[in-house]
Length: 230
Image (cartoon, rainbow, N blue to C red; front, side, top):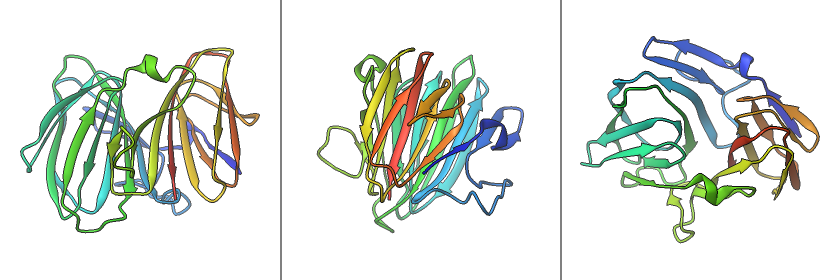
């Protein structure tokens, strides 16, 4: 099953400094049919104005992945962590037993990013944060693992049975990927693509389950972000 969730149908909140689109129910956007996809609970498509950001606020028992599309975000938390994550790179935060964090766009220009929440498999674990650079050229024509529940796979580690992957697709080319039909995959492309022949537009959500193989094709250059979760 491949279900397209058009960008125009997503939840929307414009706070001036933050222009947010919600793939799933979040904050004041509530849709009983969009409470998540498997263990994927939140996928927000955010634009954060320069010199603004999210002030300190708490989380617990959630795996939070931030994929920066343009600009940069600067993180700081109650554990003493601080770091700047730039375009194409990823940061993860395991909220665990509880953490307070802030996310600021200290740049002069807008920052755009995906914030993805995945339900944890280890409630009340020790909280943690990490970030890594992932040069886009390293994922040209194939999916690169960015974060996962596997501690020794060379990617960022989260406390969940999930994989977060990224790829860049050249116009006129294709990417093939094997899939477990029992799992829940969610894909967001930056430009129109076809997934097993099903058309998706730029920044649409693509909810996938029951598939054993995926063939992703596009006529334009596209950046792909994919989560594979239970």
